[in-house]
Amino acid sequence: MLPYEANRATQKTPVAVISAEERIKGFDEVIGAYTKEQAVNEARRCLQCMKAPCMQGCCIKVPIPDFLAAVAKEDFAEAYRLITEVNVLPGITGRVCFTDEQCEGHCIRKVTGDGVAIGKVQRFVADWAKENAVNIAPADPDEQKRLAGKRIACVGSGPSAVVCAHELASMGASVVMFEANEQTGGQLRYGIPTFRLPDEILDYEYRLLDNKNITVVLNTTIGQDKTLVSLLKEEGFDAIYVASGADKPNMLGIEGENLKGVVTSSEFLTAVNTLQVDSLKGKRCVVIGGGDVAMDSARCALRLGAEVDIVYRRSLEEMPAHAIERIFAEEEGVGFKYLYNPVAVVSDENGEVCGIKCDPCVLSEPDESGRRAPISSGKPHEVIPCETVVLAIGNGTNTVVAQSVPELDMTKRGLIIINEETAMTSVARIFAGGDAVDGPSTVLSAMQAGRLAAQGIAEYLAKM
Ligand code: SF4
Image 1: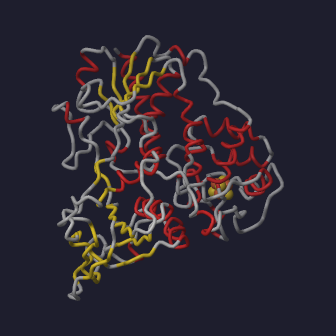
Image 2: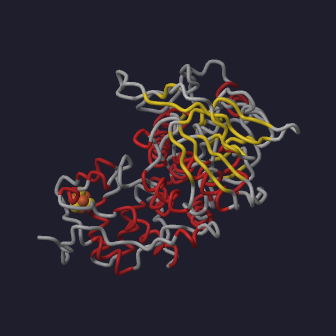
Image 3: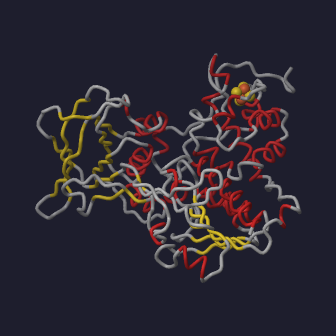
């Protein structure tokens, strides 16, 4: 017997989405929010499963059935309390997590229709808390004394570092967060367009850093301005959490990719998100890549006035972008050229980019991993005319931080190796997590890494 009146609808409660014609006029959020009635209606689709398979798809283990029950009973404050006990960025994750593959992908309701729209209900709860100025509950007083007198440095200010800093500060430690950029947020601020994550939501949830135990130091690159060793030896920190992320762009290694007019997706999205980009009206832009970042880049270029094509060397079937992001891009007018392998950026007599030369491909038979590789079809190369090229072919880890400590064990790919139980690296008192350890990953797994590291640091310092 459910503790509320069940909603037996097999399909999700639909949410408003701005029309493609409207949304390309600016950078406003594309997916609308549930109203109170819609959120309650959707929460009432939850069957309160004993084993809650949805939670298997949530690495930070939000108590999904419990918070949905609270929403179903219109107790939004309780829902917020339950969510934020484990997820202190609910409005952000309610927007940027691809919940259809995470919690919702495991929902039992999928057997007969759609999974419960857990992410959208969570987003409603977070927005309700923002509107009603409901705050995250403080840690209990004993917990707040646990690390009193300890000083910890956090490197980076993405979700992993923020969760770690918040947990350590809640235990009474003094945390100093070092961020290389002018603002906090990492990829959340600089890598995700505001039509997916508005600054207002990011800034609001980052108020976690307005804590007497946390100091944020901006424009400071660890590995250049200071080193990990100097933080420990000269500045007297008891421990360091390295969450420096993965923002080093991969390059194609093709002729002409260093020409003016060719930018990486990191550079492009940072410029867009910091309003430092010129109009692309009347220009043609080619985005190379097939992931979500390629979709974000293409949709931004479109909003800046360009005619945009995405060039991807495999077919639609292999495209790694989430379907919803590709569909949004298609609806907005982005063109897609599949099975084109870029071989050179072409310039005119003035050295300006005027096109990208591509080798038309076919797919090989699947290899051992089942993946089909693009191979030349033998047809003549084609030049796609464009004035701007955005390379969106993935990022590697930022190795500047870690390379300042030669004793730090790293993989050949430049990922920091940690003890998976404690998050400590091969160097005592230096802990690490997030994309610097795992490579580019989800916001939730970065947050989980920050929490694991906070526990590892607390337990380590308790023994000192
Ligand atoms: Fe509710 Fe779906 Fe989780 Fe079951 S699996 S508890 S129906 S959200």
